[in-house]
Amino acid sequence: MPIYEYRCSQCQRVNSFLILKETPLDSLQCKGCGSQDLSRVLSKFAYHKSEASRIDEYDPNKRHGSEFYKDTRNIGLHAQNRMKELGVDLGSQFDAVVDKARSGELIDI
Image (cartoon, rainbow, N blue to C red; front, top):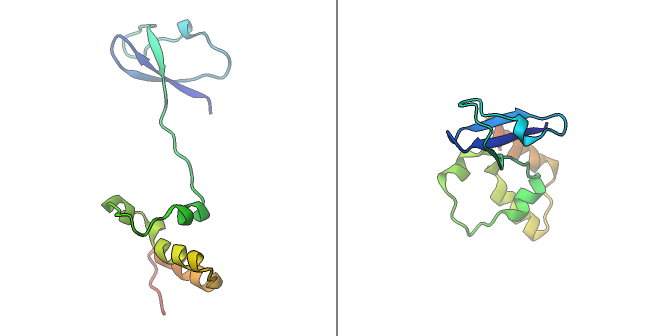
């Protein structure tokens, strides 16, 4: 969706505008003070990593902060990475166990 953000030079407010076609900057104005002295800012964005890329990027020797352990997607990541390094495929049953652990379900082993 073409939402662009501009910072007002007068009041420093960041304004979001939905722009569906070529719009001249001088037609936009700050929603706070009405100034037209705006400059474009880079909006925050997010992207999704695939499970394969998460396993590839995982470094078992790196110390992880508390945020790493709060993310349930990281449960089983070490085991998955190690099995990949060893060339061992534990099959869909192992994947099912990891998925259950990530969802908080009790696991019968």
